[in-house]
Image 1 (cartoon, rainbow, N blue to C red):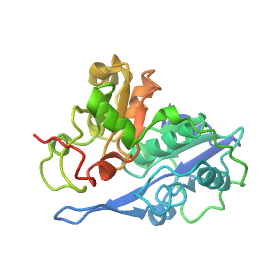
Image 2 (image 1 turned 120 degrees about the vertical axis):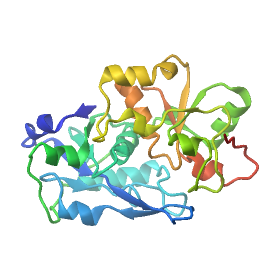
Image 3 (image 1 turned 30 degrees about the vertical axis):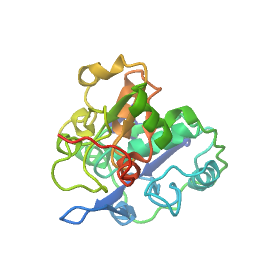
Length: 280
């Protein structure tokens, strides 16, 4: 599931490869408030891996007219993935220009819709450049369209109703992937209210990466996530279902491929004043 720049560079001539930049830019008002997502396409056109396409997580690969990045319908996702050239026999490699959360989000989306031949480029574009590997610019022609058949795995998603039941019963462990200060409800917030869903434990996405944005070695991930690995049921969330895919991916690297993602996360939860949040 995790591929190094050197290993990918050695396979660039593989005709089954489908490489995608997944970057989205998030801007937030200085005083807090909702993020504004912006496509990373322009910076992708400035520099990208040779032959790579661009996957629009904030547009084609999300449900329209709802919360940002919401899980799309199987039909919408299948149409978009097919246009990108993802289909039978393909091996998809995803990367981002900065945080790997965009790459792990597309990894999760593809996995949710039944497609498992996906790798995340460890360290993304910065690691590729640091290895002295070539980059391209401009807008490539892309991959030939194909047919993607969506086979949803609903057991990988937690709905708001599921999380309400968890809060009431304690039936699953809730993983909050935000920074510790956001977990405590401190500072400005990008959501309707600060805080965390009651009963949550904090596993910051950033703590699972090194200072270059690469995933920690397996033994270090195992140590960081040791308190969670033995839990019978896990549900991860963050602000909008993006950074939480980092602990979901890290746990999958360690063999826990049953972690659910609360896709609406705090964007959905905090918007309803009847739902509880904890601070401190």
